[in-house]
Image (cartoon, rainbow, N blue to C red; front, side):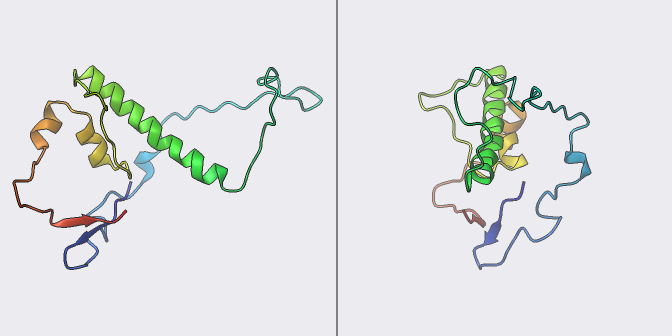
Length: 134
């Protein structure tokens, strides 16, 4: 939810609640449904019984790295669905959603009438006041 932006003079621009969105209680869904995998008395997993792989592997680095990326890809798929619903025709390479997927980037990526009106196209020779640090 936070994108670190710096001014051209090297000053941190996103340093307080006036310049970026701080996560709060309103970001928690009203309803959050979760289901657990079922096991029998022996501890065997009933839901994934047909699979012949090792389950519950927690390799070093796998959960924090890969599972975190699933949120980004879920957001990207939601934006793709919204673009399709709004009749945005994709080019042969689709569209690009840069990370971090901030609320502003997601809103502008939807491609509806409101986001098209808000789009700012820099003129030749113009550069942004802010610098994103990746």
